[in-house]
Each structure stands twice: as C-alpha cells, then as structure tokens.
Image (cartoon, rainbow, N blue to C red):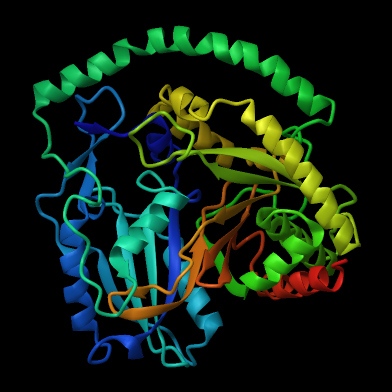
Length: 463
C-alpha cells in the first residue's frame, strides 16, 4: 500500500480554489524534428506508449471515509488518456503574450482529484510555427527534481529515442485496497503518531534555541515576519499571470568565475536586480532587502525512501536595496553562505517527519479562514516571494520526437506571497518561468524583460 507522506498530503490539505498547489512546465517544441513531421495523432500515440510504462502518470488518490490517515495512491483501472491530453489553439496572432495568457488561464484551474493528478495541453497555432506543451502536475505527486525527472522519462536524447525500460520509473501502482485492509493500516498509522512525537520532540527542542539564536544574531537566514511589505504580499485568488524568458548559462558562469561565487549566487543576484528594477518602476522599492523562500532539494541527504516531495527550504535575503550590481553579488554570496550553514543545522527529514501530523480538516479550515479574513494583509510579511532553482538537462531533449527549445517551470503562489520565480538550466540556457497572482501583479513581462538586463549589469560589473 503506497500511502502519501504527510508532506505530500499537505499540498492537498492546503489547496483551495484560490491557492492552487500544482506545478506547471511550459515547453516550446520544434515540430520539424519529429520523424515524418509533427501531427497531433502521432504525438498522442507516442505519449500513450510512454504513459503506459510510467506508473506515476496512472496513479490516482484513494481516500474513502474509512481511511483515517493520509490518502493512498492506487492504479486507475479506468485510465483514459483523453481525460488528460488536450489539444487547443492559441489566439491570434499567437505570440508569446497570447501563449502566456492561455497558460495563466490553465494554471488557474484545479485538477480533477478523481483522476490521476496531471494534465497536458498541446498548444498549436503559434506565430513562429512551433508547438507548445503545458504539463500540469499536482505538487502532492512531484517536487521540482522529480518533476524534471518525469519529463526526461517522456523525452529522449534523439527524435527517435526508444521508450524507457519497464521498471525504471518507480514501483508499479497497486489496486485499491480492501475496506478492512485500509482501515487496519490507517489505524496502525494513527496509533504510531504519539510515539513519533516522543521520538522527534527532543531533537526539535534541542535545535530551536540554536536556530533562533543564529537568526537573531544575524549569523544565519533572515527571521520570518521581517520582510518589507510590497504589493506582491496580499490575499490571492485563483486568477494567474504568466511570463517567461531565457538567459545564457555561459554568461552566468562568467559572472560566477569572475566573482568567485556559485551559480546559485549569480541566479539570485540576477533575480534581485530584476526585482529592484521592477519595484522601482512601480514606485514601491522598499528600503530593506526582500526576503525570498528558496526550496532546497534533500534527495541526496534524506534517509526516507518514499514520498514524492523531498524538499526543505530556507529564507534568503535579496539585496534589492543595493544599487551596485557587484555589491549585490558579494552580499548575496555571504548571505547565502550563512543561510546554508544555518539551514544545515536542520535535519534533512525534519519537515517530512513533522508533516506526518498534518490533517485535512485542520489545514483546510485554517487556509480558508486565513483567506476569508485577509490575514495576509494584517500581520507582518513572512516572505515576499518564492524563488526556486531547479537543475535541468545539460543536453538537448526531444519530447516525443520534437526538440524542446524552451522549458519554463511555473511554480505555485501563496497567500501573502503572490509571485513565484523558478529557473531551470536547459541545454546551455537558463529558462525562467514567472507566475503571479493576477490581482497583485497582472503584468509580469516587465519583470521578465528585467532578467536579461540584470545579467548584463552583472557582466558589466565583473572585475
């Protein structure tokens, strides 16, 4: 029986019609590379073959009334690709703005929980003759790393790559368990919770004073609720805005080598520079640095062998208050070093272990009350936005025969943090996806345009 971990299930419990917790990947494709040329029927046949070999695309939630713990994954015995694959056309003239508006509309629609939690939209009619694909998957089933891995299972290194070998893509899904079996298993899981608390509590009690002490003395990551308020930080609805862009990975590495910092430092410095320009043009640049939540993969550190989400997170101080690009790089490098050292004091599995105690009723009621009372606008800001850096393929990939020319990840937004910036390295580029809450940031294209400009500023400032 494959039960969701508490962390995976939390993304279900925290989801509402305004706070949608799926992740999207926008891929632009060169259909001319498909052997014999692109057509939708051929694309669908090739996708059907791969989905049949990848269990993650055929599993659905099973959560009857007699289940007292988190839901379980089961095989969808009635799986039908037509429920998940959709063919649509982008409105004329079919440029990137129309494509982004269409993706924003799709990103604002919830997934059907009675079926496997993913959808794929093949978007035709683009002005440049390309085809776009928007893949939407629920965060309960993937994190950034596992989502990128699933895309590579669908894709290949050549237009005519063979499908993945059976057995390479995770355990096969089980059929729905019997009523008594599920009840017995869930009762056992619930009965273990008090013992889990007793096991985990001493480590938490020992860690908290050390963690808080470092934060208060400025020797670690920023303290929550210290971020400056901007128009990005308010109550959100289900309406979304989208924009995307790309920069050269070689240029990022030039800055990295010149300043003696990491690629992640340069990416965050580029984001900080773009945000400074964006907020300055809106007349709301704060005097204090912005605070970003940065998800961190713990796939290499975790001791847990189950669950889709193997992540932690740290708070990063973004020096948007500094006008000098070089000063932003050096400040970020030092801030990140302290934040990472601070973050390493937290066990890699702590978030996943404590998330086991999450409950659907408690979380659901809390989020709905938080939204209805607009509490995000009444307390101090926890964080301004989410910035995620996901490692992607270093070589060109072909999705079902079509070369992927752009791969733009679009992460979720939350009450109080209405902007998500996700970057992904892709075959010598860094593709950047921006997703926002429409009421807070209806036009993200100025921010997208500011990203390459911020990188140019960093190149000009290199020693």
